[in-house]
Image: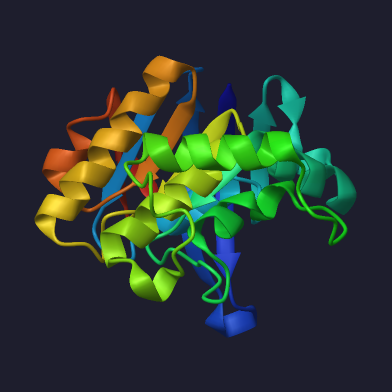
Length: 222
């Protein structure tokens, strides 16, 4: 589904230039749960940003379903990310003045037009799936941190995307809440979604189908 070949990524310019990814090769199969691990600063989040087409590599290529993503223009990339990719970050990034259901509905609201009844039903179904039935009308301030992260996952599910990218989705949660979020993520490949997750937790990485380890911007184990 995803294939990265010889990926290089730099930050900065001239003498301050720092190479974050170095000749990275990674293949992600359809329906796979792939974990990316490594020490802090090893390039994990940068790799996730490249794989999810948020960030362009400075060298190498990225293919998605046989299509060269690195050759796409800005509008095509926007369409790809909107339709096929979903993101969950360590911070849930919910809008505080919108309810849980309204936050889930955001991807379905185009050009400031209200979402239709079908989208609303899907939002409620996704919130029920993540264990938030009955809390659809609560604002983020009335939810716990774990519940807010579950809303973020429901928002990703509501997009009906093919690939879910998760960057340290349990990093700001307590252990019990993090375990619940991991249970949700681990179920998704069985429902046809591909999951790529960055984590520093070895036991969470062990729940994935496969683990890739980065060290100083290079793949050292796969």
